[in-house]
Amino acid sequence: MERKYTMELNKTINVNIPGGKLVGFLWKSDDNPHTVKVFDGSKEESEIKLDASVNPFVVEGQLYDVTKKKSYSIRYVDGLYWLSIYDVEKLDAEVNEKDIQEYKYIASFDKAPGRLFFKEYWRTDADKENEELCSGFKPLCPAEFVFVGFKK
Image 1 (cartoon, rainbow, N blue to C red):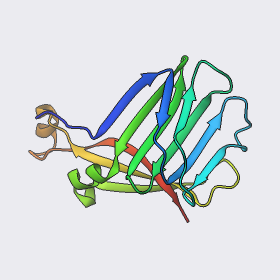
Image 2 (image 1 turned 180 degrees about the horizontal axis):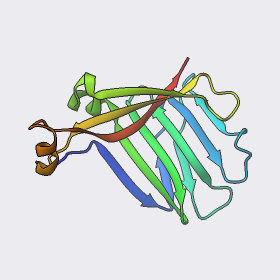
Image 3 (image 1 turned 90 degrees about the vertical axis):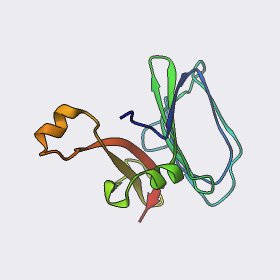
Image 4 (image 1 turned 120 degrees about the vertical axis):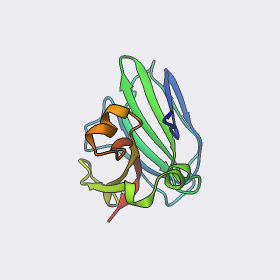
């Protein structure tokens, strides 16, 4: 059985995040970790353009578009942005509700309107060897770990 993912991974110098009602944060390279740009979803944001070839660049970013139900995870690695885009609405539809775990983490920066809120999606493993070790049941394995905003 082929595993299907509702995620897109891009490794690129330039990143464009479509505008929308964004929640999350961007931490730039020359900023102290406690002075990140926080988006609280209170207003419509214009498109965000990131260019890894200029300073400051974004070291890390987690953004969630509340209306489009899309999550953007941004990491800067070896001169490139690694951008993971998740369609949260499709993920929620594909995975049984009991196979989703929710996590809240305290933000390491000021002005966060709550705790960082993530969903971890678990999927069955199609590996036959694992099936034998689990009495014929297909084991669940962690698949996606997705930022979905802030939560009190």
